[in-house]
Image (tube, rainbow, N blue to C red; front, side, top):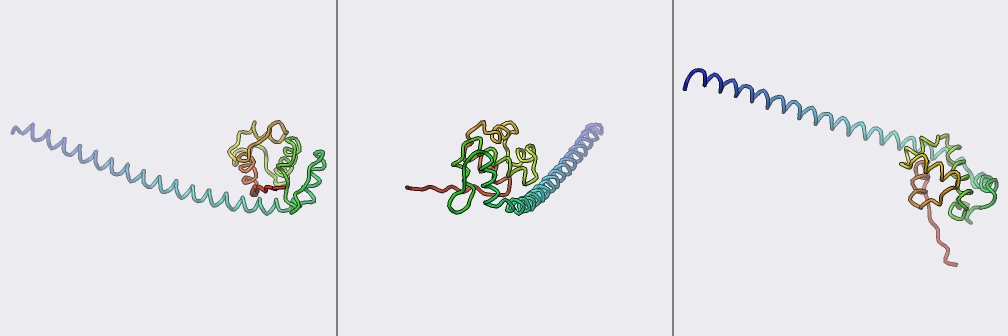
Length: 157
């Protein structure tokens, strides 16, 4: 083997080792980045849980009597016998007024709630203006974003 060929092969081997080392460094960086992202996601999730609990605590200030006032001011509606918000029995305009009041009393903007509930701002605005008949899935996302929960009750009579 000629000295030039040997030198070329040694240089190629050295370049290949450097390439493998660089790939390993990049892989380790990706692993660290993924771990950091996971920690950030967990931190963000925990922060959202804390904020959700705080919002839920502030929403509890919305008493059945206050909900009744909101419903009455929206021209009718009422509460179920247990005092829960009887949202389903409301017309879209009444439902929208109750939902808007709940959002405003929680101190949330339309944009904030839309982002957290994963509902387009336009759809959320239409819901609050009583322009749509929302699905239970949409109502559930809305109420959960406010820190509450949607409960369905069926009456066989």
